[in-house]
Image 1 (tube, rainbow, N blue to C red):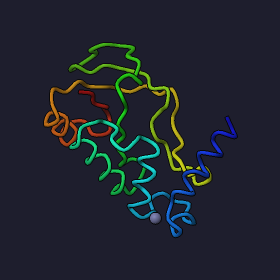
Image 2: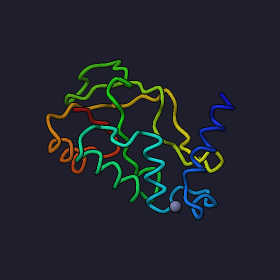
Image 3: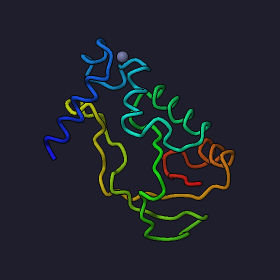
Length: 144
Ligand SMILES: [Zn+2]
């Protein structure tokens, strides 16, 4: 695993511009390099919906701290462990884990592996953005 992780780190470093290659803090990188990191981590179109993918990429570039980053998690990566506990909220485990902090040596995110998430089903993109902006923000993950 160590070898694999090292090659990922060097791949990320190689893809960065000459300036960002020497900046160990993600939040100091230029937007081009942040987008390259995004695409290496999630693919070019993680959700397959232009509006959501643009939202995710803009957020990835504009975030000033780990808490501000919103990640797309494919629903099949979640394992639901409790249904509809309250207000249509389900509870699921996520083995990859949510972002804890930037690891400046790995050039990647350190994660809370096997974390538990509260998730909410939304009916449409409008519903998703409305819920995100007004109701839950950091406490709940959404799925369509
Ligand atoms: Zn750069």
